[in-house]
Image (cartoon, rainbow, N blue to C red):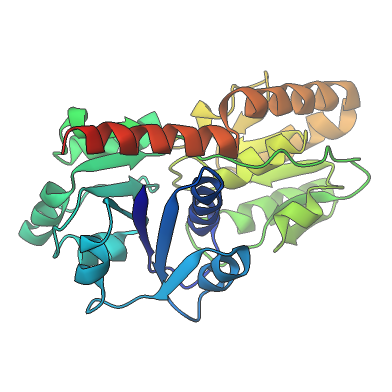
Length: 299
């Protein structure tokens, strides 16, 4: 199966990591994925290093590559706009964000052209339906993460480093100030999760939260916002703690985990079990390939 994947992102954020994991998984299954991405992007470089056929993002080259592919899969809004101009193969659109679908004529036309949508959560699927996408054209396939080594929990409380105003880093730091503890913003989660003691993820809007899944994979107790699709990953007080986006609530959750290490270990162990059962990268690849085959059977 030859699939063309398009991602126009400049940074290596959660969505780009999912694209890379999917490409590696497809290639391992004997498929022939091709990536179109910005030449100066981390995704382009990492895909090349992995042995993936990566091409420079070019609207002019897109029609020919699409004709040579069994299926086109786009992974961000800009790529969706590019690919919707050229219907040469079934078009699959990954939808990771919880923002409402645009109501203008161009947005409606763009969304109507896709063959099928992959939503990372039931919450995102509901947003798509609310924007006029037929439910039959949506499949929920959650993010998948690698099974990380279990954290030894000797390190600090960490939170993702981010300048995104929709992420609540300031709220986390205010909660830490009230507790008089240090919370370290991390720019390399896979490295820092090997020793982290607690993971804090505060966001004002979220499709699912792949960083949350990554921390759960390392067996770390997670404190996360009860917004968007995050409650589909975490059951409050069973495998993590869900909080309101308020410094007092965040601080209280951190304090509980610090004061009750046995409870923190229990949450971390259950979180790891949930990842193993529901959110591995192998499961994500398997579910995505299954959708590809289903769509191609009906072409």
